Amino acid sequence: MIQQYGVRDNILNTNSATVALNINNTTNIVNGTGTGLLIEGGDASVTFSAGDPVDFNTSLSKYIRLITNGSNVPSANINAQDVKFGGTKGNSSTNAQLFAIEDKIDHKIDWNSLGFVSVKANNDYVTINSFYPPNTSAASIQNGIDIATAGDTVNIGTATFNENVLLNKAVTLAGSGPASTILTPAIACTGDGINISSANANVKDLKVTNYNYGLRTSAATISIYNVESELNCQYAINVGNGTNGLNIVKCKFNNNTVGGWRTGTAELISNITMDSSEVKETESVSIMVSEYFLLQRHRAQTQQIILQLKIPTSAII
Image 1 (spheres, rainbow, N blue to C red):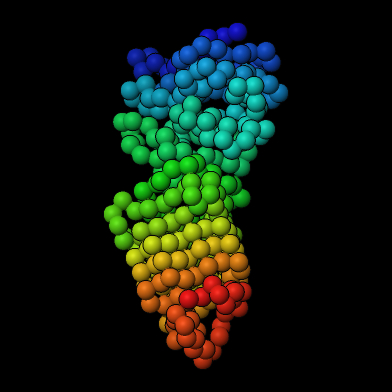
Image 2: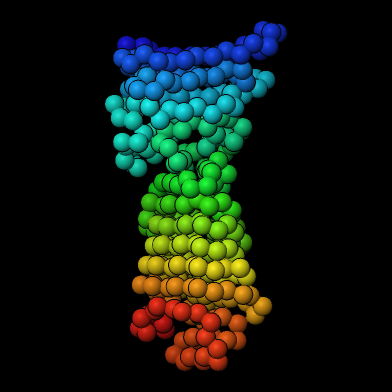
């Protein structure tokens, strides 16, 4: 049993050598109540071997910490996918366990200057505690997106996050459910909740509320699933130019000040599917696509339909 690992780049040392630690034993269990592995300074790095290199006990206050030495920070990424946390590897852990693991690792999710510790392949995790005082003071979903690469999933924990999010990569933004993961702006009625500007992006299982527009799209092959965009100051969603292959399933676009759905006069959009969703209880227009397609409270005007919408009649009020 081991109390703590540490690898430190001392700024008082004037040589340019790196300090590296390779953890490759298969029986190491790190116990105690402090930090399991401390990585300090820009020339310090850690690698874990394949297999079962180490098991961090849940009694630790932190599993892994990347910290500054007062001059620079450890910025190299760390693959910890074979590491056990409380006896379980990341790929075998539940989302609840992975969010708890995230809260015990100080790394790039918390402060973008640090290296990223990968616990589960193709995933990163953002919780309300994902910040690094004094360098950052609030959790950032955007930071999770910036770290991710195409095909990854950015998992968001249970909390209310005050930010405007730009989804500019082909990744999946996955909340913990509309009642649990809520996005709202720092200043009411400002900006877009989630601006989806990349093809092959997905958003699911969250709520956006109190923005100017809850959602905005401008790219191809976008999926929005189980998302509530409600009580926004303009529309629930603005479907913009270049949107092609938009799938909206099991969503609620209700109680928005102006309307549920908007597409502007000069916008070119195509291949839109809306299924098992609600658009109702708006002040003015439920669905408006320029002058071509208008569903307004209890009357409909269809001069030229350019969408295919699968919506139960009872859902449009």
